[in-house]
Length: 288
Image: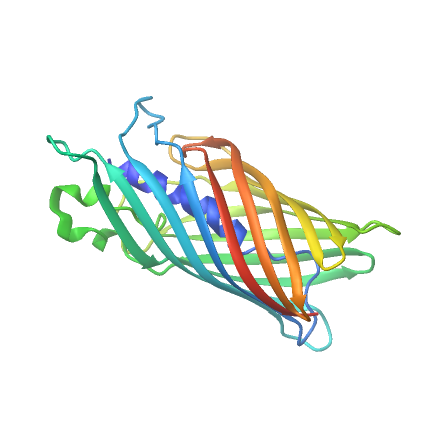
C-alpha cells in the first residue's frame, strides 16, 4: 500500500508540474516577465502494482494550485530566474479492509515541490539557444502526512516523493519565416538525489533523460500549441517513474499582457505509474 500511495501521488506530480512550469526557449531580457496563477487536475487509471500485476484497489484524483513566475534579471544579457510554488491536493479512495457501504476516502492538502530554475541565452537570432537548470525541493514531510490515521496512513496521499532533484537543460527554438508557426524544445539530464526530506524510505530512483517539444501557431490574439513531454530513465527499474505525454494548449490575450490559458494532456506511455489525463486553466500576465 505504501508503494501504491507513493506512485499514485508521484504520477500526479509528473503530469501537473511540467504543465505548471514550462519555461520556453526565448530567454527573457532584463525587466521582462511572465507570471501565471494556475489550477491543474489529474485523473489516473486505477493503479496496478507492476511488481505483482494486481490492482491495489486505490483510486486517485490530484489537484494543484500554483503560482509561477519567470523574470529577466540582467540588463545587458538575457538571464531569467523562474519559481514555481504549488499547493498540492490529493484524494485517494481505497479498500478499508472490512464490510462497508463504500470505499474509504482520504484527502490531504500540502505545499508541494518548490521548483527554482535559471536560464541563460547563448544564441539570440531567429534561432534561440540557451542552457538552464532547475532544483526541486520538497516543502512537506511525508512521514507526518496521515500520521493520525493509524493503520490507514499508507492510504493517505502524499504530494510527491519528498526527494531533491536537480535537472540541467538545453533549450532551443525558432519561428518559421513568413508563417505564424514556431517551435521549441528542451532536452536534459535529471539527477535524482538520495536526499529525502521528512521521509525515511528505502527507495533509490534512477537518473533519466528529460525532454519536451512544442509546436505552435500565432492566430490573431491566440497562441495554439501542441506539447509533448516525457522522462526516460537511463536504466529502468521497478520504482523509477517514466512517461510520455502529449496534448493541446491555448493562450488567448484578452487585454495587453493579460492572458487566459487552458490545456489538456494525456499520457500515452508510462512505467511504474498509471496512465491518466490532466487538464488545467490559468490566468497570466506578461511583459515582453
